[in-house]
Image (cartoon, rainbow, N blue to C red; front, side, top):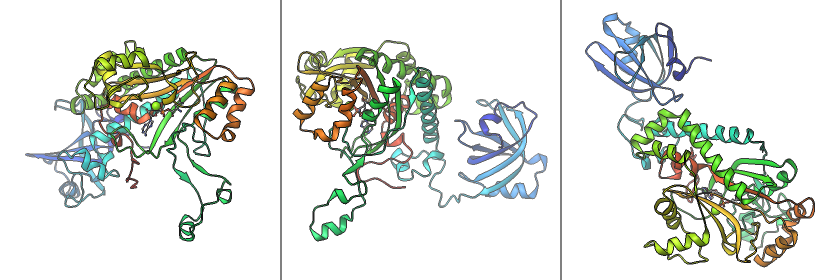
Length: 462
Ligand code: 4AD
Ligand code: MG
């Protein structure tokens, strides 16, 4: 393969090079023409300089007249030390080939600054902007860092199903998967018979891979999943997607305390990976999206996360405010409360534990007080919840009782209960929302801007 621009930046001046990419800008000054070309391999584009005093060919002059922002080009020349500030090298160019034109009259991305709202309407072209190129590179680095972290800590990567029959969070927010003739059924007025459906039962898109990960943790000890997750909640917010990616580690013989330590080490590893390897992209976010983000990440990577119980959190919230939703013991902590705890009380990430069992999922380990469960949420400034997890109930009797109490269909969970019948052990895990992580690291406000093609209520273009 030909060298990418990020590789060309490392070449020794004097080398012959050819640059492939898309024109960002073209500027003319006296006898010089400057063409900045970007190929997305790194934040910076490379400057290609054409000097008319070097008697350019008619073809080159012609092509220089035709190129504009967005044109795909191949430029040939010699790498040279650059007299301009802000770049070490440039390409003294003598040939340019237009590979694909991008007519100025119709190409939507011009040199001016476009709003994020406008760019959301052209999600297929927005990766060509500084912001979305940087988001894509940070996303890529974080995805690989997830694997690095778990692989070096003895966790094995497993793939959990996307189509499933179980509503593992018990929240009733699943997308249905069916091959039944829904239109025909509606016309005939008949109720759907799911025993005749493709899988012979009702199925939907998974809301979590946790229950299946638990099965593998009880065999491989430490596992993790990293895959797409679907929630049909009608949440039109800047932190909810209908399709998002989740990382879910699950560890046998692990307590809630082990789980909290794992979550903290994991997040710090991820922050350090981008600080080290995405300096130029983070520099952009710091300058244009969220001032001080680099300093914040450095600080967080080097300080202990705060800890408090739900009960302590409620006490803090009752002292604070004003809030839209008045907090009280037993309430579901709202985003505004989460942000208050992280931003005002702890001034950094905080892990809140031991929530009332009524507001958490059936599988969480019950505390002896009969009221709370061994849940943990990691809350961060600007966003609120970024991780949700728990120690799991390993006691068969307690788990069966909870399933019945909540009104879930026990028959659906028999396989899961088997895990408590055979070789049950204390175990714990959590889920990190991958897009929320990217929001936290980049400072991007809207979750729809950190995933290439967002799916949200009323939005499934591309
Ligand atoms: O807190 P949640 O619902 O936890 C679970 O699904 C557990 N089964 C995880 C586990 O213990 N293995 O979701 C986990 C995380 C949240 O903290 C949040 O970061 C993210 O997933 N998340 C979403 N991200 C984007 N859009 C949504 N609609 C999200 N719902 C949850
Ligand atoms: Mg949660």
